[in-house]
Amino acid sequence: MADAQAYLPDRLADLEPKQSGLHRSTATFFRFTPDGKKADSLTSVPSWEALVEVASESIRFTTVPFSRSLRAAILGPDVLLAETEWFGFAVFRPGIGTRRIVRINLPTRPLTASMYEAAVDRQLEAWGDARPEDRAKERTKVLAVSRPEAVPAIDQLVTTADRRVWLRQYLVDPDAPTRFAVLDSTGGFAGFITGPAKFRPTWIGSDLAVGIWLDADDVAHIRGYRLRVRSP
Image (tube, rainbow, N blue to C red):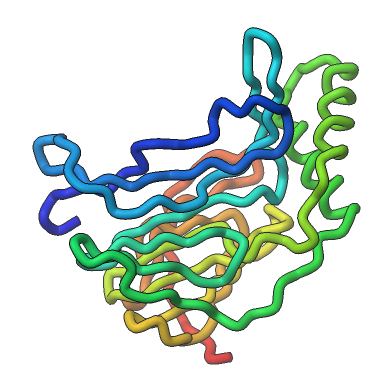
């Protein structure tokens, strides 16, 4: 933030459940002063979701495709928090609390079995040289999880230099172009921006987005793209 203070999730609850299953944690955001001391708390909100396996001496966490999560960003004096299952975000201000809730009326997309299976298979590709029997066991376990009825709404929340907010529509196919809903500083809907595949903006100005682009080998490159907003 401009005053060098930071808001960080200090506590994740429900990380030691007594039963196996799909669990969602809670993040409590605390204000930290420039010298690293914890001050007051801002809010507690639902955070990331994982498949938890409880054994006698251990607990294992597995992130499953399309699981719910939380995104956070700073816009001036405010902290923006977005739960990925809905289009929108909550605006918090230190010392005041919740200022407003911003929602966008965009339709959700149904999550089909084939979409879920394809995402599980992509996730297992990261296992590298794992034994086939281990892959098969993991695949069976994750596919047995009760999947959501709908695809999450968003997977990225970004604020811009000119005080706009970008919400990226959840990316089902990692090789597909990205699509952002753009809102002004009051939460009003400004239009859509479609971006190149495998590009994740980290800084956005009035007419330029700079971020990380992944090539065919998933090697990261820094790239910048000119912007053009299309009205709905």
